[in-house]
Amino acid sequence: MNHSTTSPDQELTIEVCHGPQCSDIGGRALSEELEANGMKSIIGDCRGQCPNAPLVLVDNRMICNATVEKVRNRIDDIASGAFPSY
Image (cartoon, rainbow, N blue to C red):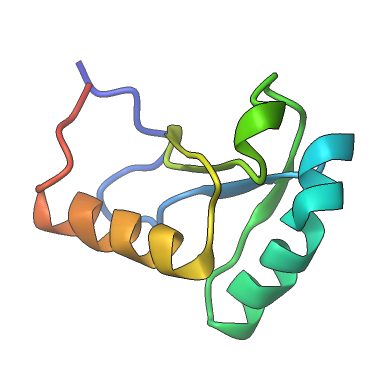
């Protein structure tokens, strides 16, 4: 079963947590960096992953301690089919 938030012809959804801890650790700055690198993101709410901040979800798949590089790698993995569907 695929729980994707997008259809195959759409871009993947990138959600960046803007909760207090993620913001303090760089979530808001990460949103700006993603935009600067051509990746649109949406603002996300706290998911209770504060020790793993900043948190990003790419097409509902979590990335803890997220960076632009980790987000880009996850997008590439999903596009290539290397990241398993769930």
